[in-house]
Amino acid sequence: KYNSAEMKSVFWMVVVALIIHEAGADDECSTVTALVSACASFVNYGTPDPIPGAPCCVAMATLSTVASSTGVQTRQSVCRCMMELITTYNPNATAIATLPGFCGVSLGFTIDPNTDCEYVS
Image (tube, rainbow, N blue to C red; front, side, top):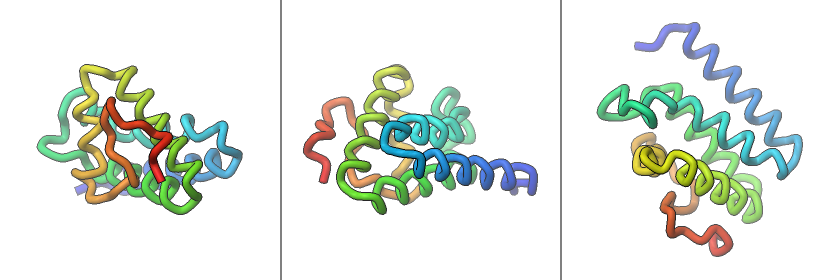
């Protein structure tokens, strides 16, 4: 369904995101934004419908790995970045909130404007 050029693009996006992640905690939001950007067409237009495509789900799986493998502070930082994104893209907040579930991954917290990231463990 996806051609090799799309999959190569996803691969390099993941590599770059992981390199950014290794650079330090201050870059967490850059990593989160880069990964969520793979889901831009779903977040902005609801396509591919009814679920996001493979590049988006690869990005969400990568984000889940980043959030779960590096400790509570990183998970809280990822949470804060996701909350900033849903605030920035308020009309599309529901689409952003559904991404992990549609892709079958967990970030370790609920993406909701009422989530207090300080209590994410």
